[in-house]
Image (tube, rainbow, N blue to C red; front, top):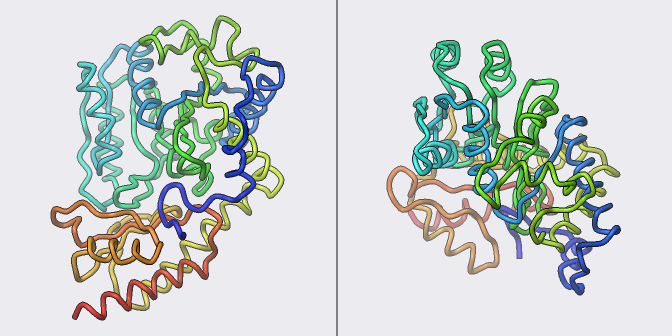
Length: 356
């Protein structure tokens, strides 16, 4: 099975952890593991003095926790970006919780109008900005570093969804000036879905320690009561996933983050070079994220997805309405090689040729 999806193919030593008996989590051993996970995550995302709040839930749960927590910190209107499904999700969460917000419009597949966006941030209307680093629907990578400076200079709390960009594209929270970032297990970490992480910079931790947002999501419950300080979660953790996270992080630290990100880049570069040689178009007109390539083909792509699945090759299926029905999403995570990505491109070309 070849997986050009999220997560991609996972190494056998990490997969085998899930086949073990589930060890009891309220032990010194598990506390040490969670504390090591936090330390490694903070180092890899460039926020060594911050804290990590883990949730046994998908990335959307971590996003919801941030919407609730940040609203309690700033208690002012929020700014979001509407360039695709994942950017718009911030607005959906604000509406769900009746939080005042404005969604800055970005055309699908295009970059942000940075001049107009800077003016919006400088307007003084907003207490926080919530946005994705990579709009995964189109594969467009936004310039979070410039945006972070505008937020910092204008006292706007900055929250970045780094779920699909972490460990492929550069994100250094302290250096850029990002207050909060979100990571989840099934994308950058290339693990089974089921865990997400809210990474808080040092200047946010003290504020978050007194924030009560809901019950399960509550930051104060995690940061206080000695839970995270002693390496425990207030509620039942995903024990196997925490163990798999530890194995993944240790492997990255041993390999080096640049080499790990370089593998993702090598795969995406090889695939895109092959696609370009066919004359096919990429969806994004801006800067492309390394972890995913979105292609627009001359035919509807749902039958291609089904054909590839019949050969045990999996890509991310399109939405069935135009223009998405002519698109195909290919992720470059996991332990496949650039040769596998080239083989996929050639398989796609052969199928399209046979449709004419």
